[in-house]
Amino acid sequence: MLFSVQNTSSTWPTLKRAERIGISVLGETHGQTARQIAAKDKTTRFENLELETSEGGALFVHGSPVWLETKAYAEYPAGDHTLILLEVTGLFADASLEPLVFHGSAFKQLLKTA
Image (cartoon, rainbow, N blue to C red; front, side):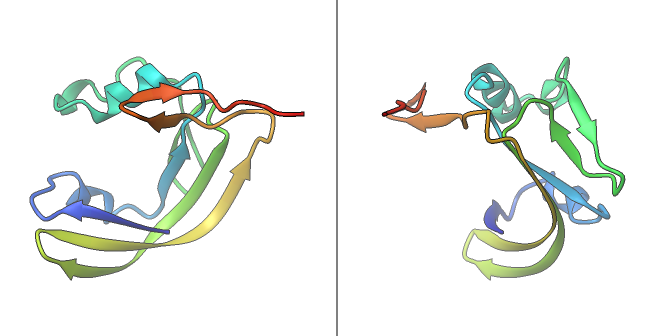
């Protein structure tokens, strides 16, 4: 798994020291959760959220359709960001749950076709 982080991030230096890092693909009912986690106020990001922890210490948002348990593998400088490569060490998927979709500056549901 690959993502980028701003070089000024105060969160990544702490996360990369963790034995395992949990990645939750949020579900269609997690619109408010996404807004809360993305808020600038870091002190309330995980307040009142239902979270689960794996045996390896990875943290996940309950009710997410996909969980990826990962660990930091490599970092690559990329201007004002750093590319982070994570090794996936575990996977959980619940096909009965739909993912959260953000498009056109709004959260949307996937349309089901026959």
